[in-house]
Length: 122
Image: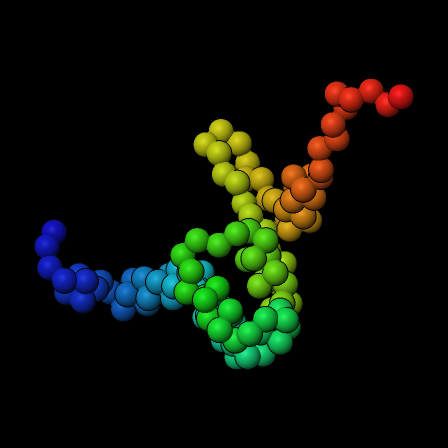
């Protein structure tokens, strides 16, 4: 089953080819970069920078990064008017959605100062 994608598509009926093209469009739409997402919301980097109280260069760096802190991504999405959700998937159970409020709760817990209880108060 060799050949190019175009050659393989030409062997399909018009209805089959249309179905493949529609599914491809859906899959492509699901895989937007942060910059694509911002543009889809009709915002420039400067617009978003004002919402984030950052410089336009900071927005550019965020959009180019391959590895972001969840809190950075959460702020970015909120500045677009959205809400970030993470979905955890396991083989043997239904997906679990983690909402951004859960991220904030875990960040707050992690930042609590430790109390030194080893010293007795006289």
